[in-house]
Structures are given as C-alpha cells and as structure tokens.
Amino acid sequence: MQTGNRVEVLEIFWYHCPHCYAMEPIIEKWIAKRKPDYVELRRLPGVFRRETEFDARVYFAAAQMGIVERIHSGVYQEIHVRRNRFRSLDDLDFLLGRNDIDPQAFAKAFHSNQVDARMKYAETMYEKYEASGVPTIIVDGRYRTTASAAGGYEALMDVTEFLVKKAASERGSLRVSR
Image (cartoon, rainbow, N blue to C red; front, side, top):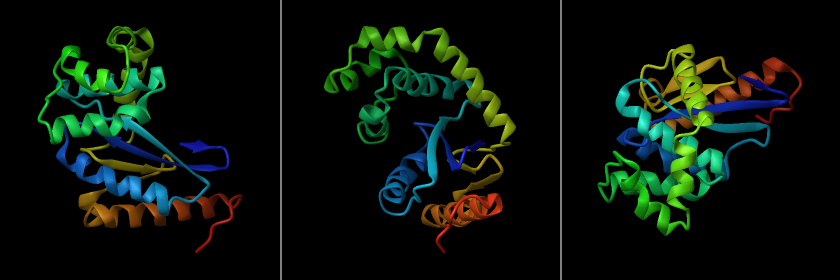
C-alpha cells in the first residue's frame, strides 16, 4: 500500500504464534536502530482461521482505545512466558489491570462495530496479500516475505530493508541512502 511519500512495512502477526513472538524483539530493534525515516511500520493481526480471531479482536480493541503500545508486548509475554492462553475477556483482566485499563471499556471496544469492520478488513488483507502464515512482512503493498523465505528472523529484516529501498527508489520521489 502506498502511503504518500512513505513506504509502508506491514507486519502480519498472531499473538499465539511462537515465531511472531520470537520475531517481535528483532522488529523492535530494527525500528529503534535501522528503520528509515520514510518508512511507516504498521501491524495487522492475521485473521486466517477461527483461533486467530480472538487475538485479532484484542489488537483492534487496543488500537481503538489507543493503547496498543501499552499492551502489545505484554500480550506476547502473557501468552508465551506466563502461559495465559487468552480465550476469553476474563483472561485479560490481569493484563488490563496491570496497565490501568478499564476491563469494561476494553470489552465495549472488543465488541464494537469498528472492531467488526477491522476484522473483515484484516481477513481481506490476509487473502489479498496471499499470506500463507505468520509472521509475514508486506513492503509497499507489493512485496511479500517471510522468515523462512529470507533464511531467518534477522535475515527477514535485511530483506525487508532491501525491499524498502527498492520500493522507495522505484518511486523516485524519496531519497534513499545506500
């Protein structure tokens, strides 16, 4: 997807995916140290089977409330470190409480029409980009890559960077440092 003069990097993920969990600190490191200023990183939960839907709703409810940055890594930690499987909103109470988030407000967002619309959008985008699993990276709406295709998580970010520079130089409107 073109975003004006910015190149979009879209990470398609699923909170319960161990590969996405392993990839998260590598993406965060890339954001902090290597992400070019002209790149817009977006995250999109993969909605590709029934068991992915709850996690996607959690992400979209958090986005609607403006709290993704407060709980994103915490959701991964709860699932992969503390072994909280998050199958119901009640399972989220501890995480929400620890982050001073009202569980009732979160539940309202979780069940909202806006989240329903985002769920449909996520499912459509997963199909549009022909993602076959997670994590998947889409660069500029045109290039799709995965850790297995790139040869590992660190290599995935190298390939992502290459594709970002390629997309930017193809546009001709962005200065790309080599």
